[in-house]
Length: 115
Length: 111
Figure 1 (cartoon, chains in turn blue, cyan):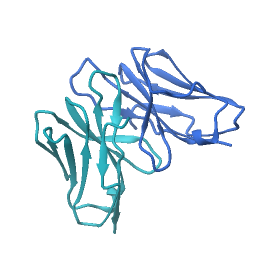
Figure 2 (tube, chains in turn blue, red):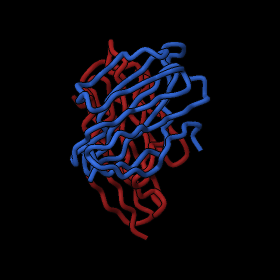
Figure 3 (cartoon, chains in turn orange, green):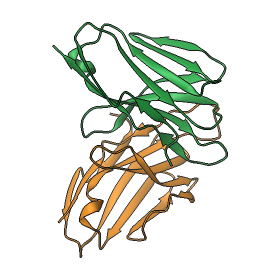
Figure 4 (cartoon, helix red, strand yellow):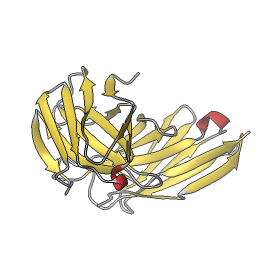
């Protein structure tokens, strides 16, 4: 148990569906991250939120829409996805800026399949 | 862009042997961190080494850092089947909020 919880763990959706991934942390961290991990590919950073403000958007298609309503919750809204968007989506949180050295805590991920 | 590149991409060893993985990075860093990922799950932090440190130990793990070569290595001694996983290095992209992971090494320890 890392203190970062992702739901759902598995999701199958059609290309015309709209769904949301949820990430929750109660570690008091001030930065939250979304990563995409495709089969046999490195982790791709998608978005970074610091103190509820989006500070990084790594050229992610607009069919992925992040939302950070408060420092404990992060969402990834999905709509009109493509089959190549099928992947493991990982959320992470860490303390950035208040301490010199910080480690990231990861959720267990959401395995997304787009059909 | 990927900050870290790791080699080898895959490594298969016998139980009891040592496993060494290498990571190279591109920008200046304050620290470098190593993570482990079991298949299809989240990453777990293993060890952090600061830029002014050259070597660090934690149990069966030994990490080295060479800032002049922008590289780090992770050594797992006396490996066990339970060490089978993917291992990643991670660094902060200097001047940004990006936290970048390397390409990873898939380690398989045969019993």
